[in-house]
Amino acid sequence: METLNNRLDALLQERFPQAAAALAGGATFQEAGVDSMGVVEFIVTVERHFDLPMLDGNELSGTSTLDDARELIASKSAVA
Image (cartoon, rainbow, N blue to C red; front, side, top):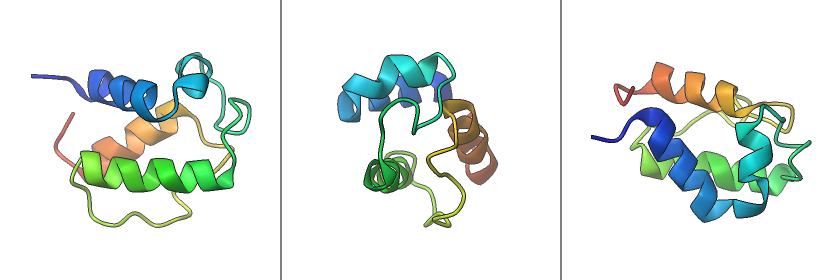
């Protein structure tokens, strides 16, 4: 069974390959070159991939990191 980290890493590689390495290294979405629409796309992708209820658009932003996303996913689901 894939772990949350593995699933999230694979999702990033698929949807945001140009930003995946920077995000994995601790960069914020902004620092990794993901604009606000990219963050929205990421939120929608995460909701669908992890079968989460609709997330509040303010829970992740350009200043969020991949660790913030992991914590959010873990708090909203039993995936971890």
